Image (cartoon, rainbow, N blue to C red; front, side):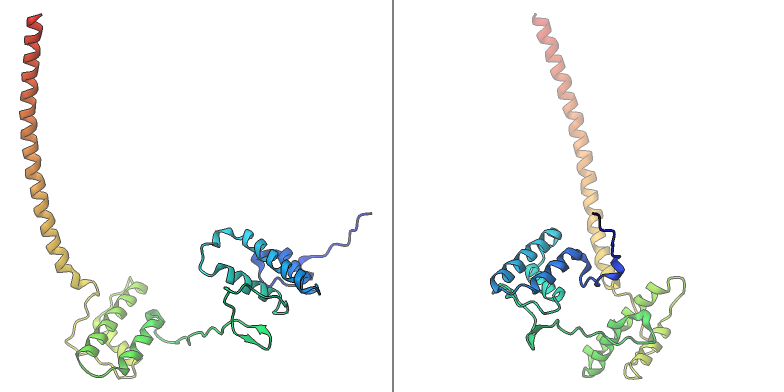
Length: 241
């Protein structure tokens, strides 16, 4: 007799890691109920092999097997009493449970978000540096980077150096101040003379290639003459016959 008592997924337990599907989670739940430690360990290793077959494209990832074992304990809610292989590194064990490492999130700034969080970090590092040419160069590089970031998010608006200097002063609480006469150049502007010199060398090379081409054309004309001579000799062969 057909059992029409169907259960919707919304009424089932939430998948802890959906990429492995519900069957893997059911297998892990079943492994937790096995009392024999040998059979429980064997089933856990088979579940790892099944998880590896489901995402074979990740086999080249470093510590891939360790990632699978950590996912296994996560799906089991750290309630599966099995032992991973000796070469697998697991997180710190706390009260008999494997807990993931804490991930710290940076505090987001409410102002000047178009410059990015890295600018805030560089400004703090520049403030901690000793005064001198090294710090001045670092501050100028920060300001140049801020100008590039500003242009990236405001391409339709012209940005002057005064705006960047004022924002730098505000972000550093007045600790970093650039002179009014200092110009903020693009970070890649220093390589422009080298490109120009390279272009000069390349133009010289093109001249050499052009001269070589004309030489080659003259040699071709000469070769054409030799081919005509061969035709003449060919005529002599026909004359002998």
